[in-house]
Length: 269
Image (tube, rainbow, N blue to C red):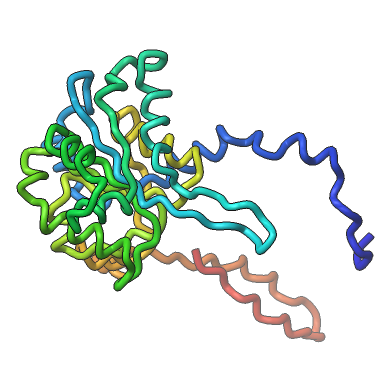
């Protein structure tokens, strides 16, 4: 009843926890947003998805967190999350579009070791040197954060290593951390807004061009000159036509007694 305290959650409700993955994937598919390049240029810079002969290096902004003080650690955007999704969807047991031995995954921590020329880095350097695609997954990277510093150093200091490669960034959180200089070094830049498994699957399907980015940026992104207020402003040249719906005039009063009728407010359409 209204105003009475709610009882404890019922154990039967556990049966539906995690059962809505298909609905969550549909949310992810509709949310997936292309930040750069423009949609008209995407087919030019990415005419085809990765194939069986392509070597792909996945770099992930993997972090460990916990939901409460007594909770277990959770690996967010794990080192191999993107690669395993690719192998599941497009490996030999899926679409057979990739060669598993040509895929490799590393974390931003390992990337930082390579940038600082500290061991162990040979595997990462060698894989990057042979790669045809470099796929980077990021989380929140506010200005001054270690993750943003690592990514910017990589894009700036290893330009020769990235020459003639497709460099794709998927942001699984806010999309506005990279500036115009950072974005200019990327082949494509997407935003998914969440790092859960259905959103990773949506990113993988975007990479292999099975789905198209359908979302629109919900925030301003100065790096691509996108201002939310301007984007959502009404067209100053539109014409909004108004019409006045006047009620029918009341019949003329008869007799000597005249009762004034209240004025009926007109309705605008």
